[in-house]
Image (cartoon, rainbow, N blue to C red; front, side, top):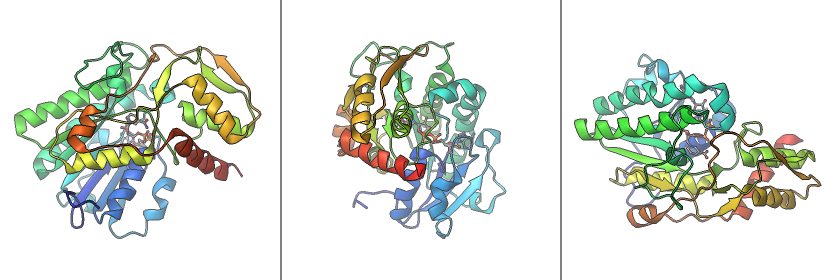
Amino acid sequence: MNADARFGPGHRILVTGGAGFVPSHLVDALIARGCTVVALDNFITGSKENVAHLLDEPRFTLVEADISDGLPTQHPAMVERFDAILHMASPASPTDFEKLPVEILRVGSVATLHLLDRAVADSARFLMASTSEAYGDPKEHPQRESYWGNVNPIGIRSVYDEAKRFAEAATMAYHRSHGLDTAIVRIFNTYGPRMRPDDGRAIPTFISQALRGEPITVHGTGNQTRSICYVSDLVHGILLLLDSRETGPINCGTEHEMSMRQLAETIVSLTGSSSEVTYITRSADDPEMRRPDLTLARELLGYEPAVTPEDGLRRTIEYFRERMV
Ligand code: NAD
């Protein structure tokens, strides 16, 4: 734990969506620092398996609840005040946008308001997990936090983009009107172990297809770009923001921008697969390019991502390979 850490032994942290991919890694890091962590999850896209290794840890409690229905305040782990609340819960993959539209809208809006109220009551630091999707299909490249975005408000992705934009607005409103200690992180495409092979995002899809020797299904021409971030780099960035007094929004990710075609070819090569790369219909409003401007993260937080795409992809491929046998 770094000497400037605001949150460590003796601090109680609430992590919503704690059994999900990114949040479960965050929970691990907070437990390793000595924090007491309560993870709230309804397992809509997460899995108990992601935190199974913590179930005997006395400083960890997993509470099953849908936070869009209100906080389970009767649960013994929810009674004592929290020092920080990290709102990480939300389905986040393109297939979820189609399958769980109302759930996504509710967890970004109603649940955010419930958690902000609790943060006010507890005088807790509130950290909102926002997204690069707040920029929509961006007209500015790379994306700086000052860019307002280009979002189709009624498109298929709008349930996610607009829910997160609402959550950002709500967070800033509570900061201004209640003086709440808040932070917003805009997370760019993150990958790593504990992603679901069938979650519809490019990296787990391509890796699963490559390991099974099936055609790799790239959307559209494959020229659209993403900048991919290994999960340990993201967790590092989120903890730097949590420990700071910054409000944000602050981008977090990497500048490792690559086209989907390059990503597919890299995965074929790293897996040693015989899969062919094929091209299928692209979904509506799919952003053309995406790369964070990391100036604020560097200057305000001292953030620097460390994992190369090859290294991160190798570790992720290993995780998927172990689960296929
Ligand atoms: P994930 O689906 O693995 O994790 C989300 C977790 O939230 C799951 O465990 C799910 O069961 C839980 N959840 C959803 N709705 C809930 C509700 N109403 N009540 C309780 N629990 C609920 O997804 P992830 O990729 O780990 O994303 C975590 C957070 O980071 C999300 O807020 C997402 O929007 C944000 N984010 C992720 C990325 C990325 O590339 N992974 C990019 C931008 C933003």
